[in-house]
Structures are given as structure tokens and as C-alpha cells.
Image (cartoon, rainbow, N blue to C red; front, side):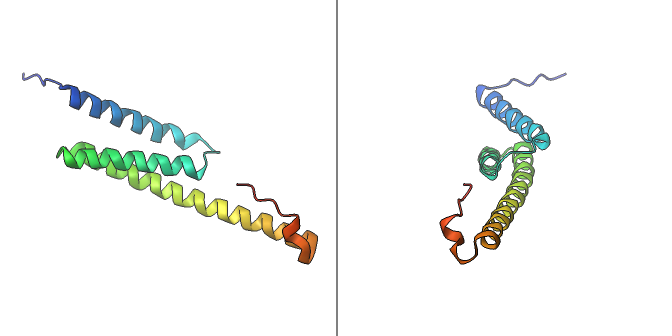
Length: 109
């Protein structure tokens, strides 16, 4: 049986992949993660994908690509939800204050 010698670069790559995967799987239960954190996760997983492509490691590249796609879809969904919520809030102020709504409207971001 042949043993595989782990170099320091491979160890770092696998550790990074493990941390990113754990972050992705762990964030599935988080209900209040904002779109900014989801965007940052997608960017980090994109970096893992790029690393896998540069090093010609198919496993890391595929895992990173799938994680990036999933994180990006979650980011877009969170962004749309935030915009929808802002529109609802704005509409409430318009209904309450009429033409003078801009003087009372406070953005939540």
C-alpha cells in the first residue's frame, strides 16, 4: 500500500477547503446572516476554486466551484429580500406621511 506524503501546500489547501466547507454547511441554519456575509463567503469560495484551477487539482476546483455557485445563489436571494423589505418600509412611510414622507423616512442600512 502506497502512502501519500502531504506537502505543506496541500495541507494548507485542504485545511482551507475544510474551513470553507464547514462555514458553508454551518451557515445553512443561520437565519439572520446578511447579504454582505454571504457575498464574502462566495468570494472566499471563488478563491478556493481559483486555487484549485491554478494547482490543477480537480477535486478542490470542483468543490470550490459548487460551493461558490451555492453561496452566490444564496447571496442573490438575500439581496432581493433586503430590497423588497426596503420597498415595503418605504411604502409604509409614503402611506403614513403622504407627500412629506421623505422627511420622516430613515433608511435601515
